[in-house]
Image (cartoon, rainbow, N blue to C red; front, top):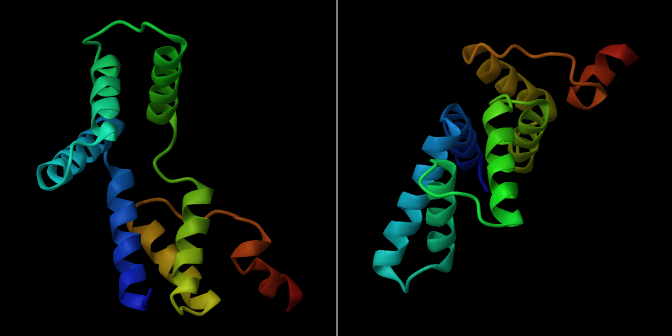
Length: 134
């Protein structure tokens, strides 16, 4: 992956996380549906469609799996859009694409600030060890 691709991935991941869980599920269904028109029917689409109907309340839970799907959807809805793991993974993507660690940290800090999600104390893995060593 090159630097431009890494920045594109960061933008996509950020935009994807700004969507609600219902919007993300609709996007996954639409993408699989589009693929299905060009390829054989996808079993993943049928499962996702069935789960979507369950989550929207169009059918009652009939199994332990259905209750697990509802619990997972509830957890996803309650989870913050951006957590520290999300930012660490995006930083890792940037570094893997050739960004220097300090440069990647600055890009992430800039994106977080623009989203109103200021950089917190993420621990030594975000470059704080350099400040502590000085």
